[in-house]
Image 1 (tube, one colour):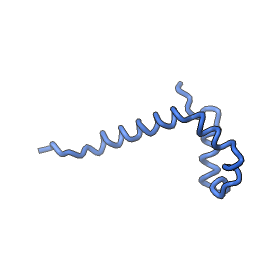
Image 2 (cartoon, helix red, strand yellow):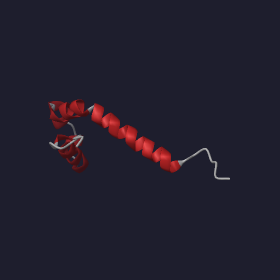
Image 3 (cartoon, helix red, strand yellow):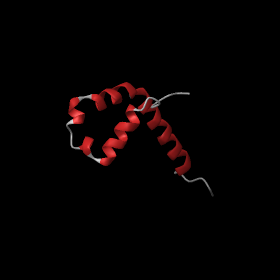
Length: 66
């Protein structure tokens, strides 16, 4: 009768919202992580995906609220 326990749309929104909130709270730590030598020397830093993520995090507009 339309009263299922699982509500995928609401759950998906809440998960995305909480993930963005967590990224915002840890923005400084993420930036520091991508500027450390242990990141630069890791095998992930040399991958295409690693470079994309690093570029996003180090972008000056990353995490801007407005």
